[in-house]
Length: 619
Image (cartoon, rainbow, N blue to C red; front, side):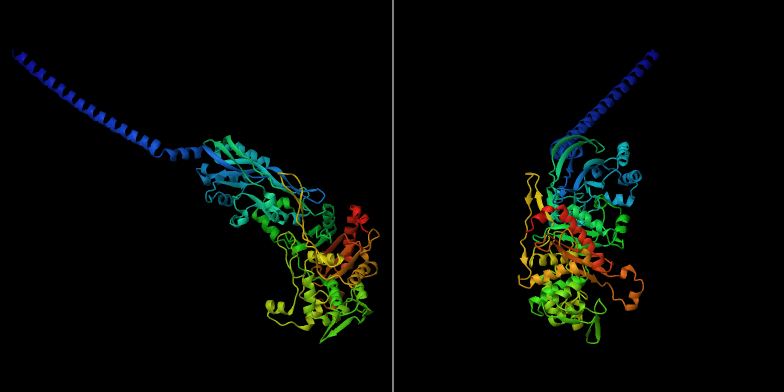
């Protein structure tokens, strides 16, 4: 009996424990259900927020991560000479871009690219800095095939790196006409802020010098766009849409490349310039400047070290001496002096003045280039023999103000307006000019120096070409210009460029033929005999521009080249109804008659041999 009672008690206790455990389990299940319901509620709320409240934002973000809008650079317009010789075109090129959105570690990418391309890491890091809304940046232009292959073989470790096929500017004629054509390059930060470049983005290619810069808006074209789908590394998977770029319009220059090449070859390694114009309309037939540069090298990008080497070159290859070089005109200035003397009745053509080889003015003696003098000479003889003393006396009679007035009428002291950037104006001195620039009065002896193209007066070769062209054209001057025609892409029809009519520099007068006759005699029996041609009659004027004043004993020894005079020769041909006018300037080569005149002769003869219709059309 006792054992049975104990067993019942034990059973009741076990039953109570089971009931308690079951109750606890039910409570846990309730808590679990509540927890699951709360979690589901939170998830539902989050899904509602993501899909409904912020759905539009995340859809745009997802789309942005999946697609890219890529700018397609246009091909620049072609450049031809007047006869259709191709001077500038475009060739295929591989350019390297980086999409910064897809670059998780910029420092690592800089290290990788620097190693593969052997590029300075600091330069790379600067290029990879985000600027505004632009996220795709150009890292390098003109990749070699080896560099492109290296990049492609490391695609997986180069997120955001893209190789894009584009056009690169190319100049088939090399360094010839380099100063005329100029070069292109990536748009600068300063240019981006200018109105004329409105709408362009960083990395755009624009003209930086020469014709490329002057007519950049015509040549540049219009960029297109491509919408692409990319993978997780930013690499293109497929194209979604394309807006094709519009290539730039083509332009034709007035340059005759045959003459241009010959002019540069004639200068050779000597520094100087040759400018040839059509005197009837101002068209530039040749505009040569030496030393020159290869626009291909500058257009494809230089390292900072290479660029500094060009800038620091003592021969200044980037200077277009034809429009930027400032030189004393020397005896070529006597053309203006002769015109002014006759126009103001300072002398008559038949008046003779004595030249004994020197001219005393005040306490100073001004010497003639011919020590023994030229004797009694009139205006014609003074121009033919380039008599300094004659023009000393004429200049003293006229005075500096009259000289300055006629020099300015011929366009000196001001830009010709040629369609190239960077032209310089030169100096036509006067009492007002000296007071304003130097704060000093004008001294009468300074007029004597100006009378033979020395002293403060400076000119550019293109100005002197324009001077002799005006004399050749009966006193009418047409502004020099390089643009002949434009060929728009839409029509492919040549549209002639607007030309400015020739305007009178001086009124046609009976005495102008006297000056023209004297210039013809300069070549036949004067200081310019080495320009005489059996092919075509040439008129011209020699000039020797003093660089520094040398004492007599210094002339007796060997003068360093850098101290030697500059050689000038200005000319036109034929003497009757001229078709070409030119100026030749060779630095530190001494007398114009011996150094510059032969170059003018060769260029003029080549022009008429190549253009026989110009001779046959001459009345």
